[in-house]
Length: 116
Length: 230
Image (cartoon, rainbow over the protein chains, first blue to last red):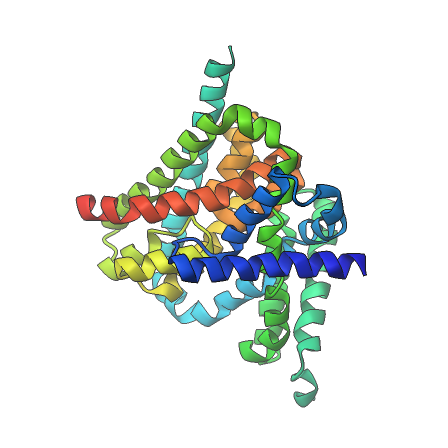
């Protein structure tokens, strides 16, 4: 029951996140709002991290797996991708590399500077 | 035969089997290009095309798996909380890094799209390509893009980040675990985070944080940048 109970709690947080998103018209998805809620609950020690161990191990160990249907969903866009594959692929590749470089080296640089 | 496939069981089984194959290939080769998620997606798509099974049939089970995406995102608060000390110490660097990265993403998409002479609706659809799908779709709609192209670009970007991330760290000599995690999450959202979690606890925690922060920053800066540069 432990795992199911924890799962129910995490699902409910996601649902609560959706509700808050709708009510306050926030530009973040319910899942991210749920993540913020869970972080606050942990931070203010309302929920103990040990009591979420089983579900967090389960979900995090299989995180990549849960994205398979989203990836398979690319099938539905084969028509669009066929016409523009070079532009979409090329822009995605170059910008992904660039964002990685900008973000990673900025933080690495700042941390070396500020820690000293 | 086809009737037998009309249950969620088919989509679930083929996804698990494809992922197992992906994992075993990855474990044998240890090469990031053989990303288990990427292999699984290719196997499933190949299978559906080969046996002429439509996406809706697969999605009877696929939708069931997708249900786990929301709780899996919520639970990213746990690794983040476990690294609370690092977060407290470095939140300024983290925020600056994500803000610069997200801004660079929007600007570079815009400039490259102009360079490639891409039409405007395609350009606008690609603007939110680095952020998590639900927010990306909203930004795309708001700017006047085509949401389905946005979804495709977001997934492609995620897979690229997960596959290339480790090599990019070596290429650009990024060794700081916190910097790696934030770079993974900012450049390639939750799909990049799947790889970051595998790389280590700090990387995973920081990548999860970056999903939300990058989405928020992109929502705020994308309309402004588009107005100035387009």
